Length: 81
Image 1 (spheres, helix red, strand yellow):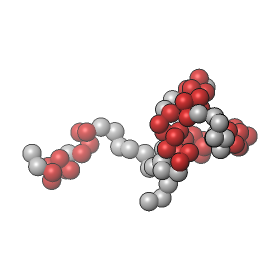
Image 2 (cartoon, rainbow, N blue to C red; image 1 turned 45 degrees about the vertical axis):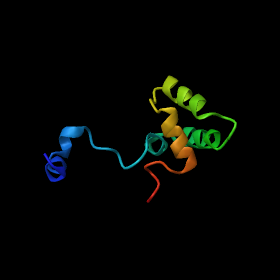
Image 3 (tube, rainbow, N blue to C red; image 1 turned 180 degrees about the vertical axis):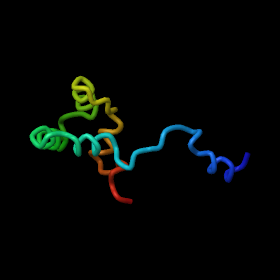
C-alpha cells in the first residue's frame, strides 16, 4: 500500500483527533468558578505539570502531564497554527 491508499483508509488508524487539547476542552466545559481557579493555578510556574495532571486525574479528568505542559507553553492543539 502507498500513501494514497493509507490516506483513503485513515479511519483504520484510530479515532479522530480533537481540534483542542484536553485542557482546552476541559476549560470549555467547567463551571466558571472552577475554570477561573484552574486557569489561575495553571499560571503559577511553581506548580508542576505532574502535580496538575495528578489533581485533574483525581477529580475525574484524565489529562496527562504532557498535555498540561503543552497547554501551558501555548503549543497545544488548541492554539491556532
